[in-house]
Image 1 (cartoon, rainbow, N blue to C red):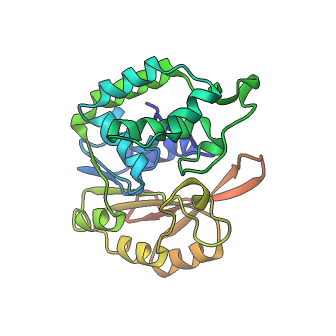
Image 2: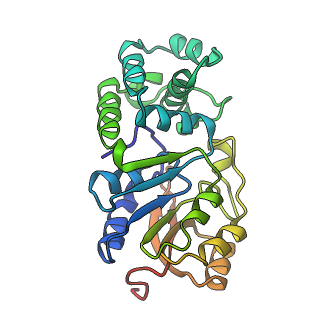
Length: 271
């Protein structure tokens, strides 16, 4: 199961980790992803029925619009919009310049930005891809039939997915006392160091200490992912998270470490 979004350096690598984590515990009653973004983890959990209920939240307006459209009755409208769109640099610029008249317009613009702007950036003002794959320019990541199939597959699971355009802290707080909840928390905004979230999103500020304080009160299982930084390690130690390093390469093929943080979780003592 794949997301309609694309983000370089996304979370595909994390899917086996999530499978091991969820299958190593009592089956959760609800899987909560408060910073949904592209939602690939939530989609995988729903598709593989690792939890009977998936709760997603995203405050970025355009991203939220696309999830709402895909999961609700407007899914057919955006599918038809994708099917009819003849992609070219001119048609993309024309589509993005228009003021969206409704939620479907905003959802389509968001998808178009994500698929044609450099780095999958959904914030306005980013430049379009020029060369892309095999010199195809803006068409490099625009695969209509694939996008349509993904949207239709996700829409078919809508009964198991609950989406909110709400503050992440509020969504987390609603499930804190549920001992059978599983929280997957992946803030797209780095704690310390460089902050890719500032380029990717309009809403790009997170109070990380407040987030750790809140998650430390959770009765259920918690798994967080962060780029490695002294600040994250300090917060993890302070609030009782175990830290696991995952070797990664970023989009520039530079070696780096991603941190997987666990609390109340499966196999926390593994090396």
